Structures are given as structure tokens and as C-alpha cells.
Amino acid sequence: MSEPSKTEMPAKTLEALQASIRKWAKYTAASEVPELGPGSCPLCLMFHESYGGRRDDSCKGCPVRDASGLSGCINTPYGSAEAAMAVWYDEPDNVFLRGEFRRAAVDEYDFLVSLLPDGVKPEVE
Image 1 (cartoon, one colour):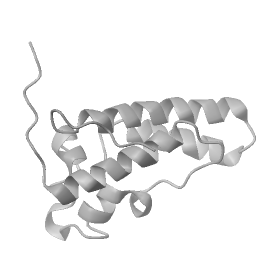
Image 2: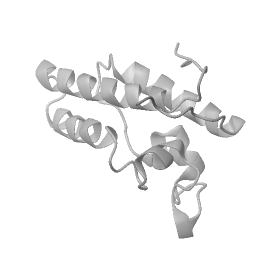
Image 3: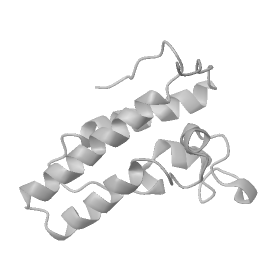
Image 4: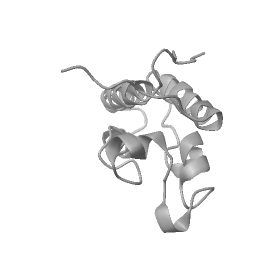
């Protein structure tokens, strides 16, 4: 069975998604422990209740929430990336832990790219 066609998304949402994709593309080759969390995510800055989103329905309109069905990036690869980052944070010179984070970052990058509307390519630097 083929996946349903993805529809267009609002321009500002697409801009925030592309910015998030660019951020995670960089994280796939991170050499230093990055900052994660809603304060560093273009989509969260637009949709999370702590920033621009609605308190009564956090993350409503976010393509990540639309895909996962849950707020706060639950049920997405982000959780594994956040966990890998937390372990690497305690040992920033550990190349194995850096590699674990990078692998998790690839999963998050791939997930975000999968949210792009049909025919839209990721804009990475």
C-alpha cells in the first residue's frame, strides 16, 4: 500500500520545518554537544505553548505533532536523540557517545524530511 499524498503546508510552517531540517543536518556531523529543546527548535518557537503556540492545545498545527499524534515530539526519533545528547553531555570527549548522538540525529533528520510536502526537497547548507 502506498503512502497518501502529502498536501501543501502554510509557508511559515514550511519555513520553520526547513530550518529544523537544516539544524538536524548539522547535528548529523556534530563535533560538540548541541543545545536541544523547544528553545532551539524553529518549529517549537512557532507552535509550542511556551513560545508561540496555544496553551489549550500545545503544538497544534506543528507537522511533527500532525505526524506523531502527540505534543512535545513524543513518538518521534527526537526522544532517542535527546537521550543520546544527555549521555554525551556528561562525557563530551567520548567519540563513541558522539557517534551515538550523530546516528540518532540522522533518524531525526530523516523523520523531519519525511514531513515535507510532496515535491519539496530539503534545503540544507
